[in-house]
Length: 341
Image (cartoon, rainbow, N blue to C red; front, side):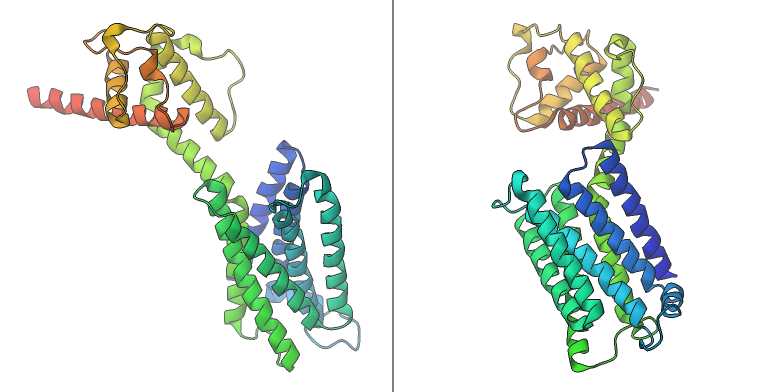
């Protein structure tokens, strides 16, 4: 059951990557990552004992039992390593966009030769090639790690590739020493680790999509009250066009509409002496803007200088900070009202 669930999750990731290619230009790295994840899905599928048995029943006479399923498993992982190596090569400074396609063709050619060599001669060479390719992938991933959505996705993807590299090295050693291959039904722990590696790789491939979607949902939830209040005053900030369908676009539109409404409420760029200069303290500044947004006719005065995002903060981050302060002021008002009653 674990194998089948892993295969299902990997193929879902394949669909997500194909969707990104369909809505964006199909560059060489994007196509390569689709091929890589599809290869992982194939490897996870042929890992299932039922599929492995069906493949072995198709083997020609003279081939040992399990050779066809093992060959398909190895070929799928070599295809993964080949396609991912194209993506990794694109991350190196010595590779330019102009020569990336030529380099990709060379890498794909080497990968095809490795798969054919593994099937025709012995599996040992194929496992060695897979282990070396995974080492290159992990090295490239470590060089490009940073604390961003893309960096976290690379870290997860590289971790899965590292597991594949270790397993490939172990398989190469077993093949070299003549030990029995870890096929379906034999040493189940190893096949569970293969499944875990496939799951990590598929998660890393779609991590940026998942994280951006989750952050967009959080933005929509946090800014809902502020957005509703500002639209009641300035409904004209909504463009009379077809509303955005995706969560990320709706979150971006909501942030832009809040910024436009705050700008209009502040006088459309007029600087007021009574407002003063905004402080460097971001929470204090956000609290004042939030209180002013709730009651623009009160004692608090704010102009466009206060509305502009502080240095180092994106418009979305600034609106979310104001929205949290706005919700906090609402809670304070509710508590005060209940205390008075």
